Image (tube, rainbow, N blue to C red):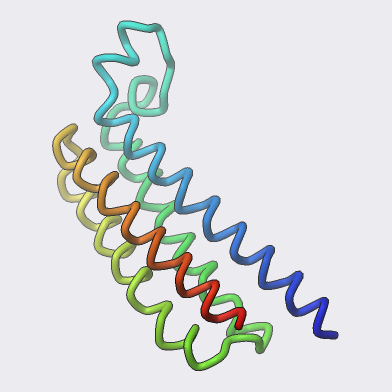
Length: 131
């Protein structure tokens, strides 16, 4: 049973990281529109516009927040995880609101940078929660 719980936690960690990482890349593409357009890259931001890219990035960030709470549903969240997961979740919820309110290239760059802090905080929580 312990191996199954650890495997489940690893899958949840991978899912959460994937969602946050793809969200960050989608938001980053908003800032990269001029360069991507010159290179002929068809990012979501170019194909659908900054607003839709911002909505997609925000949805991915919020999906990562929801995924981070899956350990509670499977009963494998310890006290460290329970307390620690709040910080990265607040960061990503804030970033989702920020990019939706202002889907500009400058804000996308700021969101992209802060998302790395959220990812680092999440890494510490997952590692600490697995101990």
